Length: 398
Image (cartoon, rainbow, N blue to C red; front, side, top):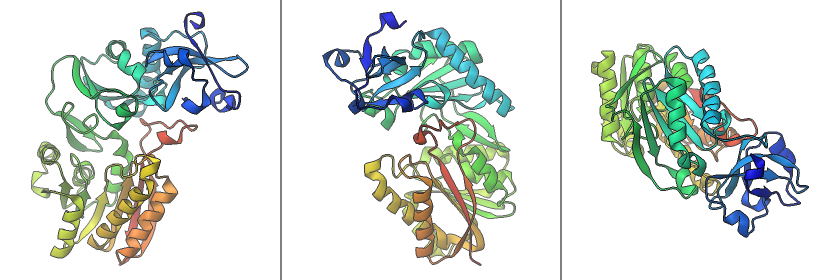
């Protein structure tokens, strides 16, 4: 394939070793960017060479992005077509089939599963593709066809929304690539039932990454009064109810998300034990404190407050404020779970911000457990960004 591809080359001062050892990205300042490179259509493929003109593999190029090239295959002879995509999907499917008894999981976690900038979540007979890189947008029909072939799903939805696409210069769009428009899909997870809106929900409709953290929270939830802040469709709240919590309250800004949470509770036969409060999470926590409310288990799973390095300091202050407001709501000897899905905030920075906030909330703490995303969200060790999720569970003083 190399003979048919344009050639792009690393600058002499760039270090090819990282890429040869598995780092998947080439940044614009590492590459010779001339008129020919800029003329390569976004999402097209090229042969990458080091400064000594030694081949390094096949990459996808987008001169509009700071990540100007992403490694597709270290084999310089690789042909990126439907068969190549199907092979990557089959390898990913084999892992998930070993991990899970039912077909509800993240099937493709971008670079870590060998499909750069591409997310695929599976919901039984349906799947949602997020093509967050230009090559995946250009080949999304091939991805969908391979997906149907490998997994047997009949409904495939394209969810083209989010910050990652804007960084690639891609427009927002939603489309049904095959099958019909599904209603809310029932998703069984940790004994709970969730309703996922595949067309109108956040991201792909459900956050599979928190599955092991939901399971840890369940160990603290039996008979408990539980508060799930930034609950989306009831992630931690419904998991707690499935584990025998006496009562759960979900707080979220989205009325649609809370309606799905109530629908999940109905499907579980637990609607009478679920309460919901719609509104700004910070305002709602302050209101609960004013009401004198106390809970045995409080979990806060906010959106990414620090999605990029420029947002890091403000994001850490926001995480500290979450902890400060949540800590007084925890009953003596109760438990507080704090989560971050921010790429830019590493575990140490998030843990320190959380501890500061708990202290400012007038409480002392023990850190019991540190969690991360489940194994259907594998981490590429060379790419720290693929290990984005952090979950901290504390016991607060009695």
